Amino acid sequence: MPGMPVTEALDAAIARAAALLRAADALLIGAGAGIGVDSGLPDFRGDHGFWRAYPPLAKLGIRFVEIANPRSFARHPELAWGFYGHRLALYRDTVPHEGFTILRELGARLAQGAFVFTSNVDGQFRRAGFANDRMVECHGSIHHLQCSRPCVDAIWPADAVQPDIDPADCLMRPPLPSCPHCGALARPNVLMFNDARWVDGAPKRNTAVSRPG
Image (cartoon, rainbow, N blue to C red; front, side, top):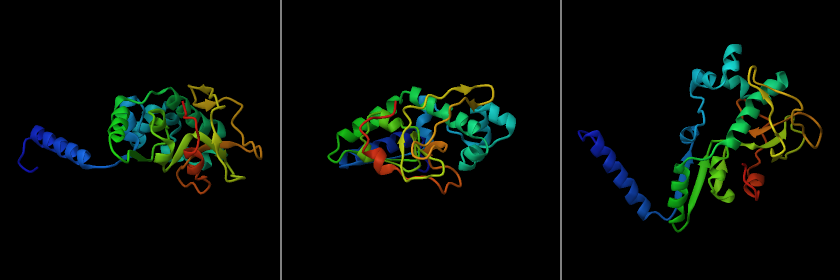
């Protein structure tokens, strides 16, 4: 509020948010990369933030929009999988911070519960115990794979992928994941930049009984 000290304005905003929650019958959680920072996950904010997380790609001058791109799997699959394989292993090992639990418990108190709409592909909401059928991961999930062509409109869990990454050059050692339908290179079921080949696998992910972990 104009003219109000910062601490008082913050207290007033928190009180108003609490009142709105008490009066609500459902909670819609909209979340981007920022929510994972307190769990220790990078948010790739700008090229320099991305390069701090991936020094080998900084040496090559490869930007986030270039590696997070389906063309990278065609041009240099070992490097593309080095980047995504490292992220897959990182997300598997990351425990969601307490904020996820707080949000889930807030939703549990409401008559219609909580719903999640997130652009994150890390699976942290699933690991934190949010229901599959109350979540939209609008950019897909790194915990699922698809054919890089794609030969079929299908996705499958990435559970069998155990990334072996050379930290010096961010290259994934063979064998690289392959499509069980045609044998072509598989890729994460993640919506990338300039991605006309992404398979929207939301219905399949949301009916899965197991959570990535």
